[in-house]
Image (cartoon, rainbow, N blue to C red; front, side, top):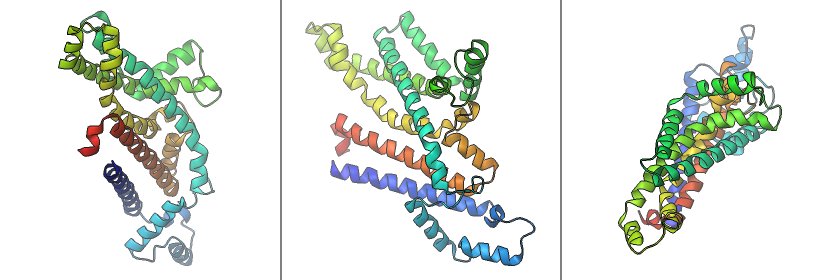
Length: 305
């Protein structure tokens, strides 16, 4: 178990380092970073002085070392757009994104898992057909289109919820449903497939032959084993719900990290964009690592693979 955890932690660390290196290279390839801070009226002395401040007078490997050291300390410099430290801006917006991701994740489980189980248990019935249709629509509808449709019907036409922003407690409903719908459909398909495999297994057939009622077979035997594959997907879901919020937060003007990344991109605020990307990566890697640990406890075979 200890070797497994060390290996997963090492892979998470390599992922973070790889992303930081890619971000550093892209910030240099995109042009001289001094253009962000200086204008056409700046003198050559201003350019030289800013180059020293940014460490551009040093070799690339030293520049990357400085960038990495700052990232470890949580120091990504100052946001050009906001005029204050990047870390402060990110920490201000992060709670909104984490809240949206948590609600969307709950929706994906509360909708996807029960429908997947019912679809498998009621195989070949109208319930199964309904589940397949929900999964098909959920995984084929683009988030931006689904968000606009939900906004049009429930906010504009019916006036049930606010159309955008973070105005009240119910403002999160539309963006959370839009973000969680795709993963609810994915969970539905995954749980249905896993449940069907378990229900067709030999030990379930033996339990039925011994006269064990269907309720006990489903709840005590099939359900637990059928949840092992979706548990792996949960790590991807949790990370993707947060990092995949760019489109949804932009459509609904939700004041989170996704919208902040888009704003930083259009404002050419590279320090802020770097901070947001590193934060997204850290959230994704942490979620995946936690689920890997839980997966090892649920399925002991993973520890020795």
